[in-house]
Length: 262
Image (cartoon, rainbow, N blue to C red):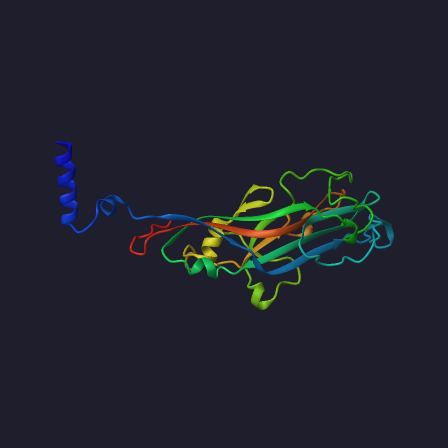
């Protein structure tokens, strides 16, 4: 009886002009990972000096005795974070350094019948080894607490944002890089940020009408202005950032299969 059933199944399938393997197989979907490396970069910074300030009237008493150690050197490629320092017990100076990267998304755009699954911005992060180039002797460690003692930074010094100006074609800003507030980015761990939605706006079909797609990614500090840094201690968090990459996970489908966006 079993042999008869198998024979009838083969006859029925062959009657439709397909093999049993083809009849039972579902349309194949394939999962892929694409790694993109930066094709452009822009380093930006902002610094602030707390000048000598009168306490009573114009000529009587001063609240700050800050003397700047050396001229701020400006951007140093791939250095990211912030610092602030005192002169004695007075606020002296603060600074922020950023590193913005751009990517050629063409290799992803040209893939047909695909669905974007997840995009992670990754990088190697370690304490910058020469913080004295920024402001001088109080900065013996680039990861240090308010007392000047070295401390670990479990989440690192980097906050990832999305630039909202076309710095690659028009040049970057004189100060810090302006950025979009939407879509956001989410830190996974030190050296990894989920940037799926931001990448979708830039390289896929997810940007709403009237939205700003953004232009790459800025690796900046948690602070967006030196006005947020009071320089009332010697906290420093400046990292050396290398090997920046975008890890793009996506799924492909046969050309005749409708791809439902996530």
